[in-house]
Every structure is written in C-alpha cells, then in structure tokens.
Image 1: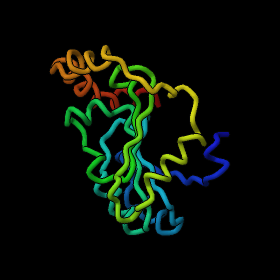
Image 2: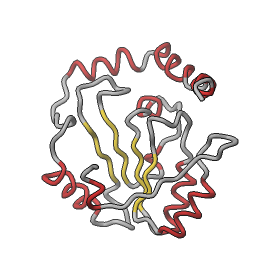
Image 3: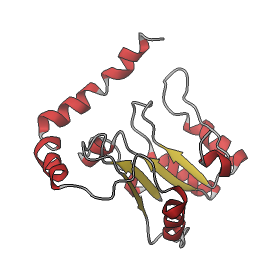
Image 4: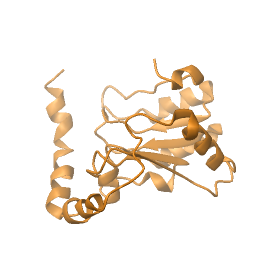
Length: 178
C-alpha cells in the first residue's frame, strides 16, 4: 500500500493485444465513465513513445489534468528523440539519477499560467512540502559534476545513439520472454 492510495483511487488503462500500444480509444472510453481529475502517463515498463497530444485531447474532453512521469525517458526527450510532454502536460515529473546520471533527486515541473488550474502551484507545493517530503529523492543540491557529466557524456552523439538504437529492439527481445 502506498500513501497515495489512501487519498486517491486509481484506474489503470491497457494496451491493445495485437499491437502492444496504449489503447487510446479505450482510455478515452474509460475516462468518460470514470471522470478522472488527473490522467497520469509514463512508465518504465512501456518501451514506446507516448502520444501526448491524444492524451491532452482526452484530458481536456473530461476536464482532467495531464501529468507525465518521464524519469526513464527524460534524456531521450531532452535529445528530441521522443515526443515532448512539456507541450501538452500540466505537470511533468522526473528524476536526476536515472537517464541524467545525477544525484538521487526528484523534479516537478508545472505550468504556472494554466487557465484550467490557477492554483496548481499551491497544490503542488502543498502536496510536496510537508505532506510527502522525504524518501529517496530528498536531495536538494545538485553538484557541478552532475552538470559536467550531462554536457560531456549525455549529449555525445554515440551515447545518445546507443540509448535510442537499443529501444526499438527491446519489444522484440521481450517477445521471447512470454
């Protein structure tokens, strides 16, 4: 049980069995019935790109906010190899220690000028401090070494290519594990 399950009820969405892609039509149908206040996307177990524009359309139709967790894909998004959630999402969360190879810390981005959520900044701040503060992402300082690694290692084209070129083969390799 997580702390969030005390306050929130979640409802998962699925993939289509024939393509193994997110079933956006079924997600829209579920959202119409369930009426979520927040739709969350992003997953470490989904090795495909997200259709943030379609998710935004579903969220707008049902009056929900859209949040993306890009902890595992932030480097590929920064390198413009994957779709950019910042163009569509109200909130975007990530970490510094996974693809960015930084110290263990969490980052929360949100739109301050969101007409559908003028109090979003207060809601995010109140949810984090002091409500959920603590845990493994409690670091607030980021060292110069972290930024040096981003500049010298991450943006090297050979490392970017390695990360991106291995992604398409993952679903094929996973098929053998069924």
